[in-house]
Image (cartoon, rainbow, N blue to C red; front, side, top):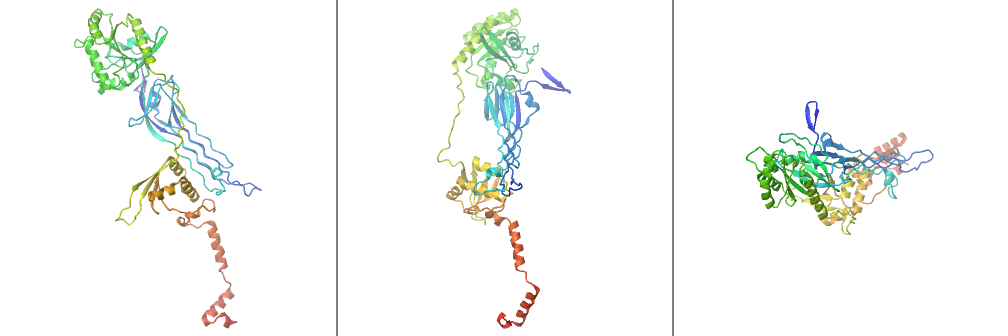
Amino acid sequence: MVLIFKGLEVATFVDRVVLHLQAGNGGHGCVSVLREKFKPLGGPDGGDGGHGGSVKLVVDPQVTTLLDFHFRPHIKAQSGVGGGGGNRDGAKGRDLVLKVPDGTVVMTPEGEVLADLIGPEATFDAARGGRGGRGNASLANSRRKVPGFAELGEPGDTLDVVLELKSVADVGLVGFPSAGKSSLISVVSAAKPKIADYPFTTLVPNLGVVQAGEKTFTMADVPGLIPGAATGKGLGLEFLRHIERCAVLAHVVDCAALETERDPLGDIETLEAELAAYGGLEGRPRVVVLNKIDVPDARDLAEIVRPDLEARGYTVFEISTATREGLRELTFALSKLVEENRIAIAPAEPSRIVIRPMAVDDSGFTITRESEPDPEAEDQTSVWVLRGPRPERWVRQTNFDNDEAIGYLADRLDRLGVEDALAKAGASAGDTVRISTWEFDWHPDAGEYIAGPRGTDIRLEEKNHRPTAAARLAARKARRERTVVPEEAAWVATLQSEQLTEDDWS
């Protein structure tokens, strides 16, 4: 079945898409000081920013295709809201839940498997939302009573993932085009695939639920295979993945084929060669289904080739989807094989929460020297790279337009042990330290934090050439004290012209 949209033909079944995921950014913290009548020392009251929403993939049994993502590949979760004054925290961004079919494999564009989602409610956190920044009310302590800065919201994860659907079925039907696979699944289940008398009628996999007595199993019908399917010919390469999870493979052979150069044994050998070339299907149980025995010549051919197939170890069934002859025996035999496979597979253990505490000697970061000083260069400095989840997050949440925020970052790194680690590694004053995408000049022993005007840090004054408000006020007072009256100016001029001292004048 296809959709016709303004002259464009679009398939309703999509089993591979590329998604561009963007998790929500965290909201910025707020810098605010309480200003109310009769409360001159209200203190900081800036609220925290809300966390950004994450992007999650959840298996939904009602979803059977990735078609929705084919038309909407760019996915973005809601960002967190920034904090406000009056200790008002920003709202959190809502998580974005994407419903995917059972059997969806999540991979990177390079082919690395991130998750294999099998079973209802299977969940994978694809992109994590950014943390919200803390406001100055949360950053206040005994040393910084009224912080003049707040943390920035952390950006959410941005990544590209490939979703690939591999149908979850117990029995997979394989065979040449027009072998009768779609007819078989249509008469043993409620599936309604497209059936016609020309090759490659089936363009998408079809799933059906088969009832055999009290047992139930699922059957998958994939498009017909031809020689070279494992290398990309026909539709085999696109849909061979849908039989990877099948416990039993059923070779459906057309005994009434009109091609004189084909025979059932040759068809099976060709298909087995393609399955071996694709790989991973060698140990699956096989059965051979000789179809269309309602045709007299086909029944005679089935009786001729059956001994040879059984001699090769195959279990052979002769059926007719037109008259439904042999279908009961086939479905019960497949049900038995599926049940044996289910018993052989160990039951899945429920997932357990594993807590891995940090090792005693784990500092949470690593320091490596990226480049050593060049003896011939004037600048004899090295470049050190600091890696670690906490230092990198702290840098992302720092407002580098605020000196006090920079000083707070330096203090946090010092408490984490970065200063001592750099010294032990051999770093010298003036060396470059790179954290994430930021570079800093390392100056050890910068001194303790001294409270000053909000937004400033005395340790960074040498880098800030603009005088503060307090410095400008002190300069004005000094200029006033140095101002003299006119009489004093004349007295000083006379002393200088006559080269007299104050004693001579008196």
